[in-house]
Image (cartoon, rainbow, N blue to C red):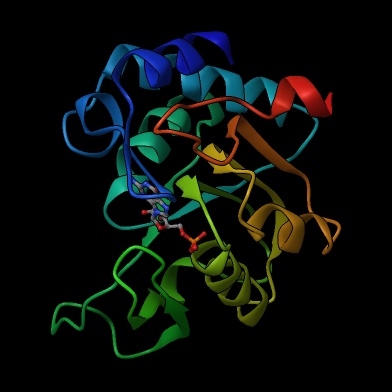
Amino acid sequence: MELLKKRILEEGKVSGEEILRVDSFLNHQMDIGLFQEIGREFHRRFSGKQVTKILTIEASGIGIAAIAALYFQVPVLFAKKTQSRNLDKETYKSSVYSFTKQTTYEIQVSKAYLGPEDHVLILDDFLANGQAVLGLMDIVRQAGATVEGVGIVIEKGFQDGGEKIRRQNVQLESLAVVDRFKDGKIRFLDAVRQ
Ligand code: 5GP
């Protein structure tokens, strides 16, 4: 997605060897005009799928999922990372190792909002080692629901999350795939792959 790649090149900041920061339009301040284009593009790429629900993970996935849901006209469900007394007692749970925080945390989704009748599109901001998406896929399977696809805004092609998900025969659509950062520079992989 050219518009997204342009913004990444203009505003993305490389942190160390593996982290890309895009706080100015995605992870802190949110550019809703860009989110609209992202939502439209996910809708175009998954147009053949019958999606009944979008599933994401708090916090950064929520904004993207909410705008995308306007195109799919389905509810957004987000997995919670924190224990809360407000959450229903009956939940699906999965463990996720956080690449950025280097800790394991539990994600939970109330059983009230996901069931065997659901066809789920999983959306998230970044794909690194795939732990967040695999945790969400685990929850969909526990519910007896179907994963229709996985949509990612930025995939880091040098980490193995993409490979792990594609290996499970799930349609994975990443709107920008970045290559290993060399001298703090950002390059995209998808031009090479397609
Ligand atoms: P994974 O579970 O695929 O290893 O990591 C994906 C999650 O970690 C995403 O939900 C995202 O929040 C965070 N993440 C991983 N790599 C990056 C990165 O380079 N930049 C940012 N901003 N977040 C990242």
